[in-house]
Image 1 (cartoon, rainbow, N blue to C red):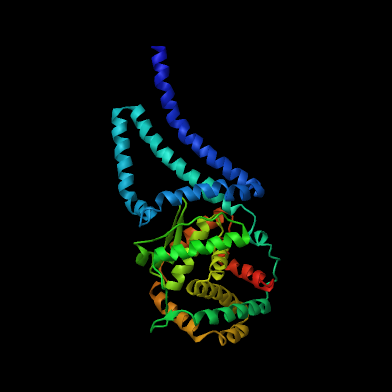
Image 2: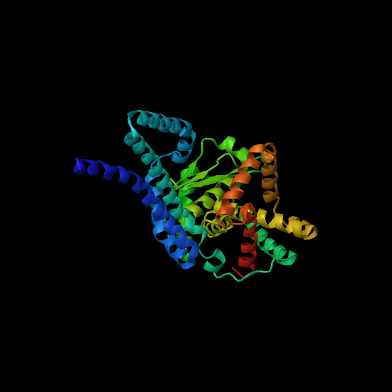
Length: 367
């Protein structure tokens, strides 16, 4: 009887130790990444890349976002777990423990994907350091000079793309072809800078894109499925840049401003006209907003030099965004996003504006 009882107790103990072991393994990686930047750099580009790649590869065969399916199905999934727990409780403590163990194991695996696959990217050395960019002094003059350099490139790029009657540009690619073009761009980025290990992947269009626009979210990287998800309700130039941004997350560039600037660098170096145009227009928006806040007179001067084609795009975008501009959903989403970013050491949603600092450092360094 004693041996039989021990045999029954051991598996029960394992039901608890399995999720606990997974949780502790992920937590250890996150702790070492937080304490030692060189470890975070090494892990992020090696084991972290492997985790993100495997996840992306596993779900790449689906033409839809598995993350979106999980989220939309979450009430039904929760109901199944509750029902299983109730049934387990009726059969005895052991059966209930099995159900709880399954739930805890799933939660632990999701935590592992985050803590070992994505979160170390927030603890790595900065993109400025990786790109060997000097610290740039952000003044009205340096902002103005940088904006002029971007305008020169943007005006030239605008002549190479197609615009419709309302002034908006039209991407020549569907999502799958856009994904292929961006993957090739990231191949070049990897070769030029050597700070990522690239792999080819497809971005996923979201079915709930029209509703999602009310939250002002243009894309989401799903760390637990490895998918780069894009809100396709936005204008084409935003969709293209957002896809590149989420793919930067997928490749381990976790900080928001760094993902923005990485997307810009990958797209700007592309031989594709629309990718270059999208990259330059998005960067121009960051610089223009910063310059307007700093010196309205210099902003007016640079604005007079902007291509009428680019101006028509921005007007069309403003008209498109009017009905989404002030919504409760956007305020809630912004608060949640801000809290998440701050929990990972970012400066909240303010960090998105820091792309301006990277742009000034890049252009003033003669890149």
